Length: 108
Image (cartoon, rainbow, N blue to C red; front, side):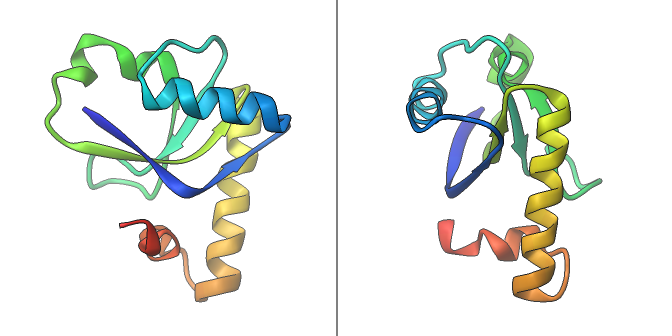
């Protein structure tokens, strides 16, 4: 599986240094303790999914042929839920609907 990081990544409670370090580790597929990622859904059901980043490094996900876009990062699941809420709020504000792919369309 190929992970693509969106140009505008949402985050919760990261210093700039921590944020950049986490994005670099994602780019080279290195484990990061306690990192959660908000992604587009793997399957047709849903608009976003939350994963423990290290779970995506497991052989099951590595064997998948599709790419997965990362919309946000957080230090725990509760903060990841806040990131999801922020993304949905921005989608409503900018597009008038919850078209998440439309919100990140310039990243394609």
